[in-house]
Length: 167
Image 1 (cartoon, rainbow, N blue to C red):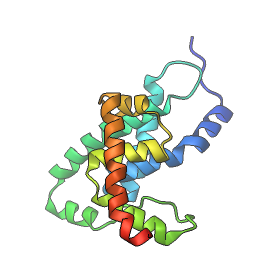
Image 2 (image 1 turned 30 degrees about the vertical axis):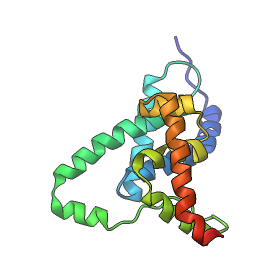
Image 3 (image 1 turned 120 degrees about the horizontal axis):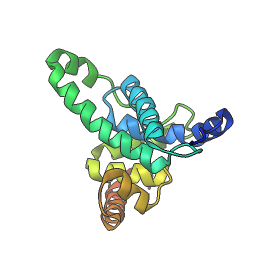
Image 4 (image 1 turned 45 degrees about the vertical axis):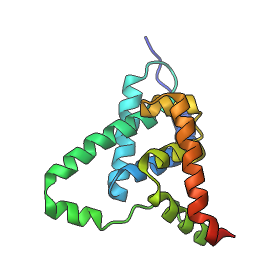
């Protein structure tokens, strides 16, 4: 019989990864509350699918967020124009309010929104999610070399977008 993680193990794991999961979910969701729901449901689903006496791997949770976000997006699209208009007016928040350099964070946030999603999600998982390219590949269902290439191309585009302002 599998042993469940202790409350302390869960708390330690959540302290380490919850903000990273939420950052990724914010990129996928259309509002802050949807991002929080998406993250919570993905953690629960990943924990149920994961066997063993430890919390699930971060890569499994990121993959679950990615997959569930696609399903959520499809559901939202079917809800109708009225709901979409309300949800679309809520800007996504990518950074916590505690970021010391708010201007730089705003610049990076704006530049990130201009990147194609395939670059944005890989950069987020690599930089803020602390995943390896192998874990990113597992999370997104792509080859590791593709994840590495998207990371390089995305960083180059990000540099170009922020070049004039940061110099």
